[in-house]
Amino acid sequence: MTRVFDEHLDAGFATRAIHAGQRPDESTGAIMTPVYQTSTYVQDGLGKHRGFEYARTRNPTRDALERNLAALEGATFGHAFASGMAATDAVLKLLQAGEHVICGANVYGGTHRIMTQVFQGLGVQFTFVDTRHISQIEAAITHSTRMIYVETPTNPMMHITDLTAVADLARDRGLVVAVDNTFATPYFQRPLELGAEVVIHSTTKYLNGHSDMVGGAVLTTREDLSQRLEFIQNASGAVPGPLDCWLVLRGVKTLPLRMQQHDRSGRAIANWLEEHAAVQRVYYPGLPSHPQYELACRQMTGFGGMISFELGSLERAMTVVENTEIFALAESLGGVESLIGHPASMTHASVPQTMREEMGLSDGLIRLSVGIEDTADLMEDLDRALRAISSGA
Ligand SMILES: *Cc1c(COP(=O)(O)O)cnc(C)c1O
Image (cartoon, rainbow, N blue to C red; front, side):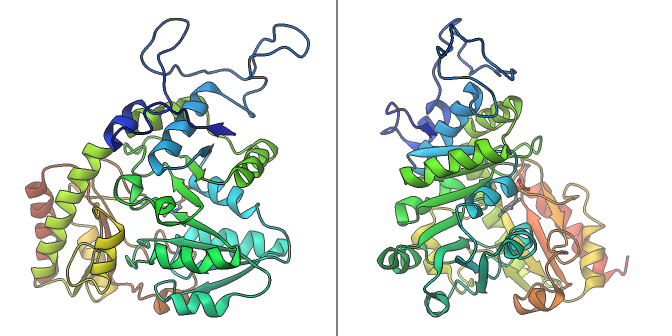
């Protein structure tokens, strides 16, 4: 279990992003944490080692990343994983057969898939509810409920869950609140400060931010959960390699600057799309027209670059995704480069059609991950693609 250092914890977010969890290398003074590309560590004698025995269990580059991410989320303990799904897998392994989880109906497609197609078969029970409505969560609680799993804002409908209200509900009943904070990042939203006890990340996205690795992390304030997560991390072995840990550490150093630009362009493009004649509806928590705009302003300090919008038909959506030049047609999000996607056939293809319809995820919906290129270029690119609809291209 990697516990954060005390140093830098009082510093501002950007200072922590650059320094927390890292110290110049003791043997050389190297300012950057080395990539400890090793599987094992030579021991000084039988039973005498320096805290490192085998790299599945511990690796110094991974330790630095775990401390860094824990410091950013306001956690005490961090655990890094080989992917966001490996992080979710580890959190779900905190449960036993017969125990029950209440999960947001609108979570990441892979999260829904691992719950219903892996853990349900092992005896863990799941109820999916619209976590925008606290009453729906409350009504789903049974004597075997142990965890509430939420994502906010959700992908791709941008639904917001009131984390303070969920934490209040859970506290009285001893339930663990686990929050997937991948979309907002700790720069804009810190669930642990709002009362949650576990935060999950796909570091693949904004935290690394450069679309060049896959990784995940779990951050927690609870020592008992951290001990069990450490056990699971070592027992299951879904650990990230040291180079991937190093890439995230490097990416995080510019997280505040990147998020500011994602947010600046995100707001501008969302506002502009809302006025565009070819667009029926825009989903972005930073728009006053978002039904939960006030809640979003209360629990987030910015809204980032994730925007979804409705074009009304599959045909129109296809025309747009095939006519952008800067926005690349690809899955994933959170990188410096802008991406465009069609959730119904890409990220959410594994979600049953009826469930997609229930959540409003139609065939005419497009999702943008607005990168940090020049805002004017991005708008021009989208405008060209939207004009292709009316010209019948
Ligand atoms: C991508 C993503 C995941 C899964 O992470 P991987 O790194 O792809 O395994 C989980 N939750 C959200 C919100 C995501 O965007």
